[in-house]
Image 1 (tube, rainbow, N blue to C red):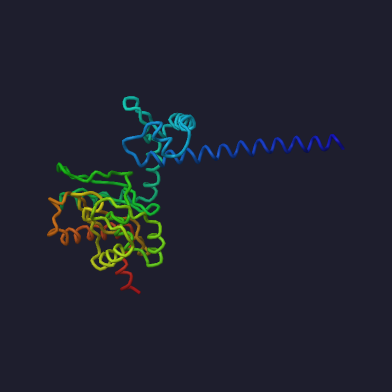
Image 2: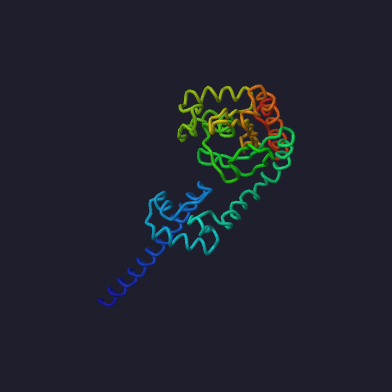
Length: 282
């Protein structure tokens, strides 16, 4: 009997150690992902102490995880500025997602055409956790241009693409997303409450395009339209961005129609359909 009890106790101890080891591995993975997410918001990089403070971990823990990820090239260290940045392998993993949908590949020629026609930077973005993340961009060669590039993020309540995607949602989906918005004030023009945003979205639904009128950055104006899938559900958005000196209020209507036309061409190329066209078919 004693031997049997001893054997059972030994088995239990071994299982317990394995469980703890597995839990530790899961925790390390979770923390590593948290570090990558944090670095993705700071294109200029973060020092070790800044990153540790951002994610709420000890410097020693963050350094150990960063070193491991550096070996796999998910992060890199800039010794001249003493900052950590996203590595090339993280870009490759993200690019695999983009390639799997073919969205960027299909949209790029149309984005280039829009840039050539209107002379301003064209961006493509999708929704991610009540924000938009930029997937691709065709930059103008003019001196003053939009600064948010691929991988950059923006709030939905103030960005052109963000507001366009919100306006394209069903009322039920819209309500759920609005509850997640921060309504942070980026400039004096930013909409900071549900009521003002709702009125803006009703206007966007009628005209078919959205305008970021210096709501993300002073001096920058952006006009956006949505790209839809085969169910007339918003899949992505494209925008035309530039300084207010070039994108004047007098040009907004014409540019809005140009952006909407290109967005419709991308929608068709993807096999999608606009909500208005779907209503006509039903």
